Amino acid sequence: MPVCYFCEEQSRPFFGYYCEDCAMLRRWLVTYDAKKCIDILKRTLTRDSKQIDFKINQEIKKILNKEIEDKNDEDDKNSDASYMTRSKIKK
Ligand SMILES: [Zn+2]
Image (cartoon, rainbow, N blue to C red):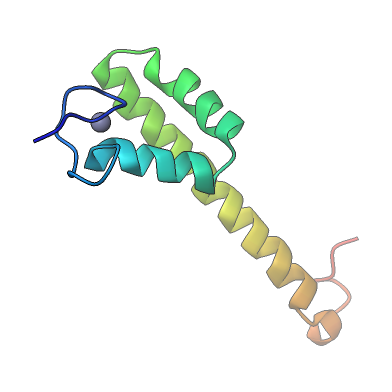
């Protein structure tokens, strides 16, 4: 089997340049902004494996919190406040 051109460790398909993992990395770089990917990797990979797991969990929580915030903002815009009494309407 030929070897991956990127990691030079794992085998690649005969008619491809990269192994499965490196092909996935390449797809992420193409799909998302390369600068964003590098920034995330810099912030996460300069740690030992336990710290990496912790950082990954933190990043996931951050993303989920952002999604929840965005969803709440959307809900606030879509909600009809006319049913609220004056005391319930925030000023
Ligand atoms: Zn590879």
